[in-house]
Image (cartoon, rainbow, N blue to C red; front, top):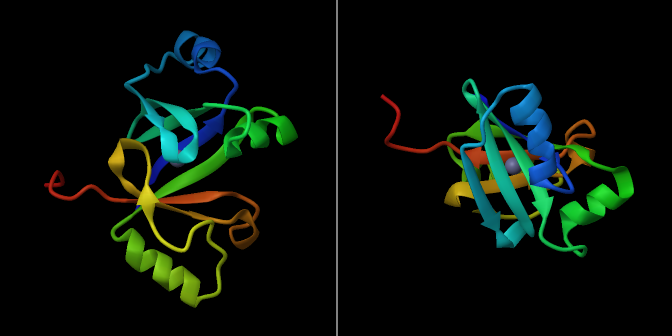
Length: 136
Ligand code: ZN
């Protein structure tokens, strides 16, 4: 298992890159619109993990509401798992609260599911399915 990425809600990816690229020296590798989640996503690799900057597409999206309530900042932590669908069933059976009862397509077309903060120690947790066939 590894931390695939850490999601950070920002008002503007362009403005935030001043810190990540200009100060920390990490480089944006990919940018993508994820319509399903109402965000533009920028991925900045750090070692085996990435920082995921989330910029809302409009004011009525989940991330925009998060920013208006709590300001910019840490939004979620994403763990890589072998099989998201199986994990979702397992967590439901244990009574954990999930945002969706089934995996959906997230950034990079990967299967993802979110565990509600009330079931995960106050942190929104994303699970992403490990890419198959590129491991040695
Ligand atoms: Zn994420």
